[in-house]
Image (cartoon, rainbow, N blue to C red; front, side, top):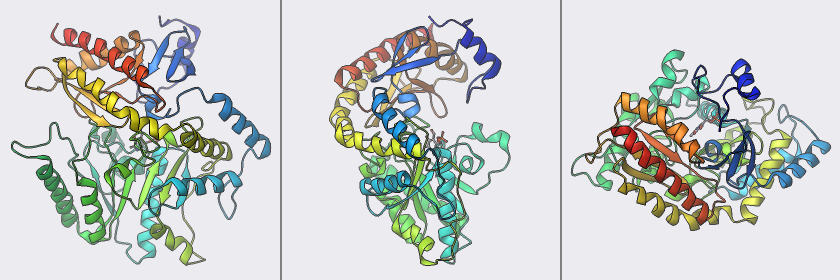
Length: 458
Ligand code: PLP
């Protein structure tokens, strides 16, 4: 099916450096050239169900090209580019900022545009720092994040990322960050501990970390509503309200990293809405445009934005040439309209129980230890036996890296084997997927995992 000696394969090998990939691997590349609904097609014509939404991006799937191309064409003919710095702006960015403020919870009324998730995270940090400096608290230089969390890889954002392997070659972190335990309810709960006790213990750990650093030196807490790395780690009930309370008590700003969870992945505009909290800042990207163009945004509350308006001479000391690009802004604005017009959030809310039920059936396979997630954001944890023993290094290499990627493609399914934490397979289908597509996803995944079971013990 995938021809390793096709001209594109050869050319890629000769000229294209792949991100987070084994560039020297002899395995053929998956070269996708077309999309339709929740499906993508490779250069050989093979069809795959995109069970990962192109890395959590393709919220509305692949069939809105004509509509969004006409939006793009109109914008490019009107004004191809203009910046939003040094006292200039353009209608597409202004209109998008207003449209975003309308859908965001609480008073997240201000948009700072970026080109992607890492830039959003790093920008949020620089806005936080400027807020504290303006308020006479320049000593707030530290942050709290979670173990195993992924917040991006630019050197600032990498400081918040809690995956040791992603950091170790790149020297000391730019920002001092204390990483606290994540919310792994499958592995992290102690014997006899219920969800409420687990939540209390985790929040005490956050409090202790803040006390250890000195509460008035901590600038921000940054966390995802549901943590991706580690496998869709949902928060225990009360966790986010607890974080909000701790942050408020200490004058610390709360950042919800919504790069994956935002724009419908959990059935809400912001994932954290599901947990009843309004953060001070929300970092977004991916689903903002459903990836029809690259773009990110930091949504900022009235309170955090206030210092930038209170003093007419104060400069917001941060920016990117391309951020808020008219093309991306116009596409993002139409993406929001499509969400409303075509009931994208409603579809996730309506279909979540079905997806949950279908994935839960996979628990019958001995290799499946846990199924967890929310909305259209799920992970299946792979285990060795009934005692839920973790896969060891050799098994991860053989099953997760050696077997699963090829077998998933053979089954016509894009999903993500991942062991930044424990061994999981992520699934996160486009948010327009109906029951039949979700059935197909669960069915194909089940077939693949049944085979993985044999390979594991073979
Ligand atoms: N934050 C979170 C939670 C993410 O999942 C990611 C990427 O997946 C990022 C930040 C970084 O985004 P980007 O790859 O667009 O820089």
